[in-house]
Length: 452
Image (tube, rainbow, N blue to C red; front, side):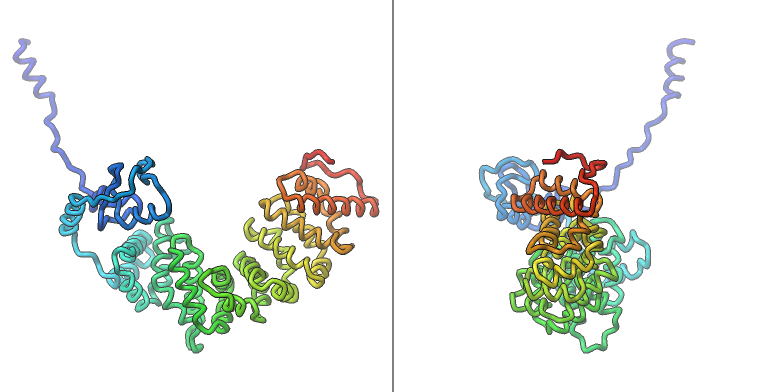
């Protein structure tokens, strides 16, 4: 076989090149989006580092005291913002090639048509949320569209807000609800013709907005101001009737700077407040009810503390200390400490001594420092202050590993006053154990500390 034939056969074995397939270009180039807001830039400006941002986003970054470039983390020699006119022109040319954006009403129709298809519904929610960015000036049109179709739009948005999708979709749904939240306030002060389901749905939406991290504080303050501007008596009664979500809204009002002292006092002094919060806590084991009680006590002090005790809160708080999430358990411990500061509260704690002592001692070292200090204060006021209550001393002495847990608190990083109270509790417990003939040595099966 000569060389010419061999070369010809080799050429036949070489496959012809396949046509080059270009990937579809993204709808919006990444360079057109602000690195901070991730939205298409309306007024791109550049920092001395060369990074480009939307003017509104980078100005907020600088106004908050930062003096570094968000993208490069480099220190800024200057905070001068230079308009990026070329990029702005490119963004405008690109926008002219895009199809027209659907109206809020059209997006809501798409959301209703999704009917359980999570991908289509999430796309509609994201599209609607994109229209309410402050710099786009379409917040009012979105709010009016959602308000006009509230019966069908709100359930779908609440489904996303409660966790029916990814984190981004949850934030978007809450932001949309925030635009229409002022419209929902009217349901709380209606003439009674509104259906209970609609009222509960409105309260649930308000709770989602006021407790969300993705909503601007200014929007939350405006919503609280709208709530306190109504008939507070009727608003409070409606919220308490809505259960845990209503308690969350009330707690937001009581802790908001947008509500004045008179409004907060009017809520905290409502005679049905604590009985209804105790009912909510018992029925739903709601952390919101605990936080609302704590806010009311913070507002009114001694009168609210007495109302809480009279409402029968002590047994419900003991259950919450034992079983609630950490933040709620710490609030419940602080409320028990507040109750123990008055005679009626101390007597109510002693009446449920076994349950209270078991709950507090069982949770004492499974909370943060603030919770441990509140636990020690509650026990010290009940067992030692003013002679204390014998029933509580007996109950604490009978709690598993009581001595070891008090030693852990004493040897931990706590305030000197807390350490002193724990020491007095320890002596009271040991005396009670000796009086009843219990073992003098502390149980170190699960807690290993060196005694003093």
